[in-house]
Image (cartoon, rainbow over all chains, first blue to last red):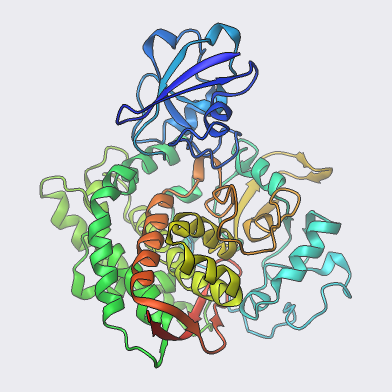
Length: 106
Length: 423
């Protein structure tokens, strides 16, 4: 299992455990973590599952892909560590991952 | 939306599908683009047949020329998220603009120009900004609702749907409040087909558009010389990607923002009242639990689908669910159909205000052109329904709604109601 900590903009924490292979977005939605809308259901086309990856985890979670980049670039809340959580497939190496959710989704 | 529709479209032309049996005609002859079946509320069975029997459908012969209709949720998603195959240029309306009338705007542009121009104005409807607007919208909605007469017939479209969205739009543009009804008129004109009651001729239509340009040019000139403000005109006048726009491009973007922020929410406000009246059990759920309002708002937007379609143009030969699409072909994504697709949405043909995953609808589109104002629209609808629920037990529809003569803007010109106050 992979343990993930979601931290809301006001500091509220949600720790969840999911199986490897699930996306980070699914980890949030299936465990009722607030602040992840995922309107398109995980096809990288709405930018409503935006998260900020904790700096220690940026390398392990991989690079932003070109389609993801295009969607993220439209968000006014874009930061260097922005990712769309539907584009991160969780692996054993990501056990302990920490991400912050933005105050608002796109 | 970003274009001027040209050519008169008589209401009972040879192209009309009105009163035809969708299952008795040859499938190739089905033409969803003709506005009659939308005005007469007869479009659903036509869409249902195409979804089931020919979900990527070629209409060879229509008043607007040949075009493909994409009917299924998943295929629409594919087209909407493949801008390299399906371009938004030259226009997203089904009618090709005459060159002299073409009004460029970012809705009908591809990356990278689209992205640059859109980013310039996006901030005004970004959620952080909306938080500050919410109390203003709430007080204005309250004023509008408190002024309405109780227990007697009134037109919900005129007195609520138009009034609230127009006030909102005037705020976003920092447009002179006393002139705000001009915005409604220009919005209606921009998508009107001559002869549909808004304008009679193309000359009349063009005169209104020129008046709009002159007015907004004056506002631009005032604001370009002032400190940057957080209204849309100031943002365009000062934005790097937009400050050197030619006048027609400025006008195109203004009209895009007017129509995008006006027709759509207006018709979802009206459509919600009608849907609750047609589904009394859902109205009862709402009365019992006001907490359902945010979810109901998404369901109303799905159910209404205030823009029935968006059009793309194939940039190269390609294939979609077994059909061969040629470079240059018009490809129309019927959001109004995808939102009723049982294969992707459970009980898609039922209006359920407590539906799980209500947000997963097509009305805002997906991909780079996804509706920029989606959060503003949701907030306006949520606040309005919260305020309605504080005052009225029942907004009762008491007569036949009148619908708009358009296959693009799916909405209402009249909705007679009687307001019953809380007991």
